[in-house]
Structures are given as structure tokens and as C-alpha cells.
Amino acid sequence: MNLAAQYLYALSATLFILSLKWMSEVKTSRRGNWAAIAGMMIAVAATFMAYHVLHIGLLAAAAVVGAVIGIPIAMKLPMTAVPQRTAMSHAFGSLAVALIGVAEYHQRAPNIDAFTMSILASEMILGFLTFTGSCVAFAKLQELIPGRPFVYKGRNVVNLATLAAAAALAVALVLHPGRELLVPAMAACALLFGFLLVMAIGGADMPTVIAILNSYAGLSAAGLGFVLNSKILVVAGTLDGSSGLILALVMSKAMNRSFLNVLFGGVGAAPAAASNGQPKQTRSVKAYLPEDAAAILEEARTVVIVPGYGMAVAQAQHAVKELADAIRARGEDRKVVYAIHPVAGRMPGHMNVLLAEAQVPYDRLLEMNEANPIFPEADMAIVVGANDVVNPAARTKADSPLYGMPILDVDKARSAVFIKRSMNPGFAGVDNELFYLPQTMMVFGDAKKVLTAITAALKQA
Image 1 (cartoon, rainbow, N blue to C red):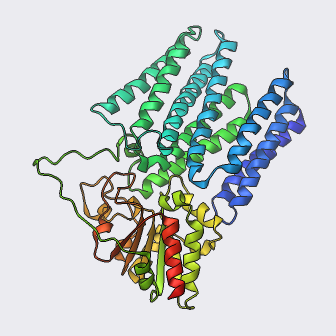
Image 2: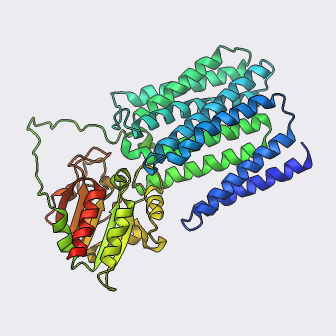
Image 3: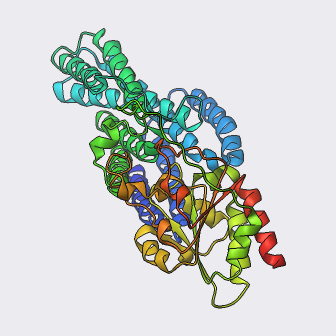
């Protein structure tokens, strides 16, 4: 490898590291994205300099196909579909890594040393399980299949047995690298494990699953980097894998659940019928009009807005900003802030990105620990499509799957407006106790239309 390529690889790795640092802050996230793009372009250019390409036409054709498919998707993709697109990126990236691993195996077999074979087997298992797991995550996020977990008696035993079979086949390959039939058998076990693993995880945990799959894809790429002696692939894969794992752990902590509970807990499954045979009691709520909410807002001095996935679905972030501006326009003593739960939406930072798109000032976006002390002093909390992250059952009901999860303390505000399409539960599949509190006003309808109506009524008051 020539010296120029090595310097370019070092520059690329530096940009990857800086991109993660900059993307950790909202104010510098755009710079972080540009750094990552520049780093990848430099890495590709350095690779062409470092190696002799035999079939440049095939690479050019692949690049054209990828651009023709990828650019329109990136330009037209709605923000609500970013989690799905992320899942499919993990799927195709991990599949590519796994298939390259298979190709490397067939080129080198049977003369493969134990270390190289163990790395190849590990990255193939990670790549294949990430592929099917990401496909299932996409299907759940896109609502092609139900978001609730697919649970059955002994599912964890089946899952772990499938993974153990893949690991056993990998060990056999390390001991006998010439047995080529072990490769498709190992791949099949890994594909099945990825499918079963994510099928058993509920929609409420999809943000964490996305981070976990990101970690698996990165670790698979790092393993391939060792086999190909590619330092930049090792660096990039390790950064991707470690950051994804750290994010998954942070999000698990935010939900007050262990990492293993997310993977094997089956949260969101349909609750079992009551053992006493009595029918479940139904409760009703009173529906209010947007004008009723506007009447309360006329006198509200402190307002906390809580965005959720419903805001993303309705693309109501601009309507939220317009309502906040209308409230603040009623006097300098009016205060409006936004409370952001760590797992609101369907991927980390989902709400921050949407509100930033609507030009909401960064200093008004409060994390959970900053927002919760404000709720007892708030005249009104406005919940826009959030559900599980504001459910008081997380504090009061020990038998709830949400119990122990830190939530936004909307129930402590003097009044609350809950904007929602229907009474359907959130991704965790449990009823929201906030609906039935005396200070809660349920306003049903599309979030964007409801917010627009509230804003119009407030301006006319």
C-alpha cells in the first residue's frame, strides 16, 4: 500500500471519529454528517489508490445502480420513514459483509488458519442475523406485520438453541475449514436466529433494536476488516459497533430495563386474561374540542409540549411551532418548552430532528431530567401523539410492562391536553392511565389539524 493511501486512510478515520463527536450535539450535528460523508469519500478514493482493480466496469455499474436507487429515496423519504430506511441500510450493509465473508472463505479454503476462520465465521454469523433481524424490524416499523412481539412458550430456549447451533457449526469450521457444507448450515442458523430474535421484540423497543442492529453490523464489518487487512474497515466498523452498543445500553437505562430484558422480555405482548374470569372493565373519557383547549391556553403562563410518534406521522412539527409562537405572542411572561423523552418516536433523536426541521430553538428542547421539574409548575402540558412515555402506570402499577420506566411527569401538570387519533394503546400495548385523570382533556383527531385549530382559536381569543 502506498504512503498516500495510508495518509488518506488516517484522515478518513479521523473524520469518522469527529463525526461521532459532532453528531452528539444538536448544534453540531450537521457538521458531523458532512464529516462522515467526507470521510467515506476519502476512504473510497484511498482504496482505489491502494489496490489494483481488475473489473472497474463492474464497480462503476454498481455505483450507478446504487445512486439511481438511493438518491430518490433520500430526497423523497419522509422523516417518519427514517427508522425504516435505517433498518434496511443495516440489512443490506450486513448482508454485503456476510456475503464477502462467504466469498473470502471459498477463495481461501481449505488453507485457512484457525484465527482467520474464527473471525470469518463470527462476522458471517453477525452479518446474516443482522440481515434478517433488520428486515423484520423494517416490516414492524412499516406495519407490514404486527408490531407486538411474537411470543410462545419456550421461545427463549428455541432462540438460544438456534444461536448455539450456529456457534457450534462455527467451531466445527475452525477445526475443519475444508468442510464447505458447514457454511450454508451456519448461515441458515444465523438467518433464523435473527428472524426469531426481532420477531419476539415489541414495537416499543424498536428504537433500542435499531441501535443493537447497528452495533451488530459494525462489529461484522470490523471482523471482515481483520480478514482483509483493512485498517479503515476495522476502525469504521469498531466505531459503528461500539457506538451502537453504547446507545442501546443508554436507551435501556432510560427505560429502566436491562439490555437482556429488551432482547428477551417480549414487552408488548397481549396481556393474559384475568384469572378470576371476570370481564375487563371499560372506562370512558370525555372528548373536548380544540376551542376548549384554546380557552385554557389563553391564561396559561407556562406550557410544556410533549412530542411523540403521532406528531411525526401527522408531520405536525411545524404546526407545533406555530402554536408555541402563538402562545408566546400573548405576552413576555409566557414560557413554552418541549419535553423530549429518550425513546420518544421510533429511533434515537427522532423528535429532536423533527423539531429542528421546524426551526424550534435548541435551548427550548429539554431532556427528561430537565423537563420533569417544570411539570408541577406548568399551567398546561400538551401531548402530541406520545403515549407510553407519559403513562403514569410506569410509576403506579407493578404489574404493568412499563413499571419502573422513567416517564415525563405530564400527570403532575395543572392541566393536560392529549392530542390523539383514538384510544388505542401505544407500542407497549397497555392502557394509558393519563387518559382518565380529571385534569386531562382528550382532543381526538389528526395532530396537525387539531393543532392548527387550537392555534386559530387562540389567535381569535
